[in-house]
Amino acid sequence: MKPVLALVGRPNVGKSTLFNRLTKSRDAIVADFAGLTRDRHYGTGRMGQREYIVIDTGGFEPEAGEGSIFREMARQTRQAIAEADAVIFVVDARAGLAGQDHDIANELRRLGKPCLLVANKAEGMREGAQLAEFYELGLGEVIAVSAAHGQGVRSMLDRALDAL
Ligand code: GDP
Ligand code: MG
Image 1: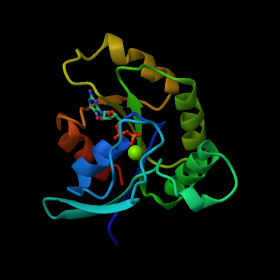
Image 2 (image 1 turned 135 degrees about the horizontal axis):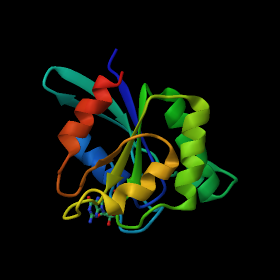
Image 3 (image 1 turned 180 degrees about the vertical axis):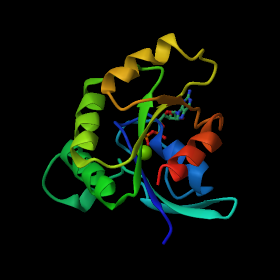
Image 4 (image 1 turned 60 degrees about the horizontal axis):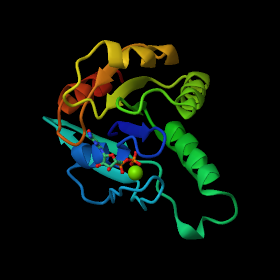
């Protein structure tokens, strides 16, 4: 069985950009507008001999039925976490810590899945001060990456697969 990695995080942190990096797939549509991506949710990738499946979250189907877009996103996030062997929890290094980050962190703790905390958009940032606040989430080390530029993505993936 290929391990399943779920990308979760609030809208616009760069999950779909990271998904494209990890899967070499163009299936996830990257939009500049929060909540407007209609992602295909699954992709496959490979690192060396290791194959894996990645789940993107945050897309929505217009015909999803009643409930707000936000409720639909929360549902997708929970479902992806449930399906995953490990969760890549993405936060935005530039925007800083947000209330929704705490909500997701609490959910991850409750479910007890192996989890990697990844601060995206960290290109050109010095580690340390700017990432320190994310330690408040209580999920351990903060791994800086830039999905857009590919920085740190490989070693992050290595660690996600090693955590299984
Ligand atoms: P999602 O809503 O979490 O799936 O986020 P997206 O992948 O759609 O990205 C949201 C926005 O952040 C887009 O404008 C991306 O171009 C931008 N973005 C994604 N990754 C990076 C990054 O590493 N650095 C910077 N500066 N912007 C990024
Ligand atoms: Mg997206």
